[in-house]
Length: 65
Image (tube, rainbow, N blue to C red; front, side):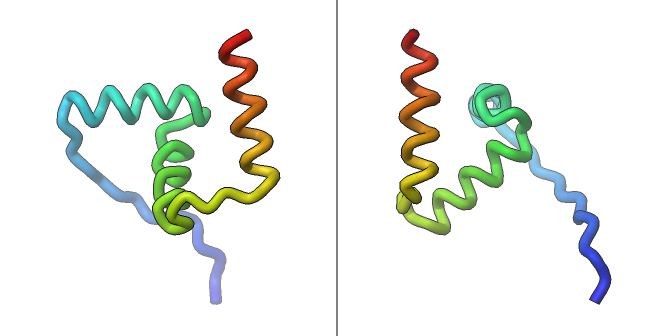
């Protein structure tokens, strides 16, 4: 089986949805990363590994400081 190099997808967003995507895209480094993070969160239904939890806590503490 060949290596999967990606499939293009196209979506239409409302202004509110696009603003959210842009905001989260900045936080996650790209819009794609934000969307994939959202999909992974839905797949895991909020289950976070210890490493992910520590990274999230560190990220929030950096924002406060």
